[in-house]
Length: 178
Image (cartoon, rainbow, N blue to C red):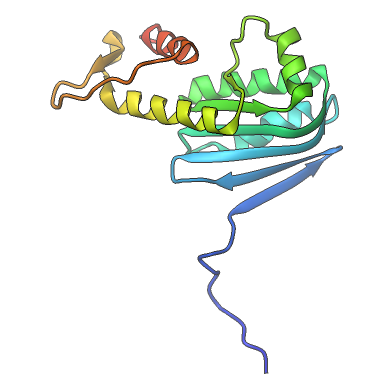
């Protein structure tokens, strides 16, 4: 006699993956507010746009995204279009994000993003620390509409020191008053 569980295991991994061309996209829920999308293989004209759509489909409720491209063997120029799409999507949805990538990804970003507008980090630890600082920074501020992001007056929250990459995000928030 075989025992079958009627309820899903709580220890089961929450990884969802999709194969597209010569790449595999995998989603992992790291916390209630953070997801990670890992890409393995080759990102090119066949799947560059699909990567952007995959991220769009899975970041609907998350506040932070880690795009792990460390296992990417080849990165064509269409991959940059996908990364740019992700950047615009995350800006519109107010999602903090970070890219961690392999040498082909770094090479592509040096050529296609020489000003360093995309949030590329050298390692996963660095990316996670930056996202943690951004989350702390958000908790220390409150959106006031026309005035933009203002310090929270009810408590004395200490605003973390921002790095150069974080200052671009802070500048973007300060200019988003509508």
